[in-house]
Length: 321
Image 1: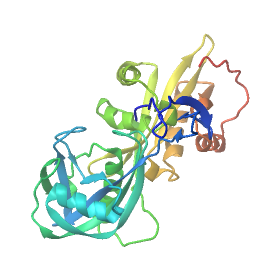
Image 2: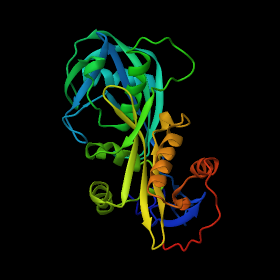
Image 3: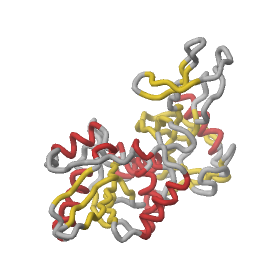
């Protein structure tokens, strides 16, 4: 979100202050504080003819790609009303809500930080056709589902494919598909970058820095990336970890700077499996230790590393920035 220059209440120039543990824009004249909060959105899984209705986006971002019908909630409508409206605008279908399917967040954008509420729905009228900012609408069967460009859409589709496309019984507990751990490949770049953007320390990266990240992923011989991939069609990368090599004259160490797991799949053993893969690789390389950049880790990540056997002793650290 663009920075403000003037206070929207009194018109004075805003300044930056430390408020509530974060640096925020505020007004010294009237006391206004500019809080930047996530915007609410909805996504709809319209179940039709044994499949799911997708729309082909007619506008950026991801113009021309297939996604779930979705959009932002207006100030005067409920989330359910927004879902029904968006379904009608983008698919031509009149729908009714079946149930809440899931809630996710996208602090990485685009275009801004948000929270998305997904609903299962069924058509009760209308004619399937693209509308509004959708150039086309079509039913996709589970075995022909394309890769969706938005991370939150991929996560909810993975759950739907596992729970409903296979006609599994309803349960109160979320069932997560099994996954495999494998080395990253070049075609994984987009999904890995989406995961990199989930790490809070990476949200301020500039366009030039993101280009550097892409280049290091493609070309750096000193970095190995492992991914966790859910066993489904289409495949979904649900987590990654990057291991860098720190060589010395008498040995070497591994270094972990970036690791992330999709929110839907956290606390399901994905992180532990990724870390185990890195430990095995470091052992094959005869490294004496694995280091973690704790300054980039959240409190939850620090607790995870500590529970995994990482010690806070033995390394002297000089912080450059």
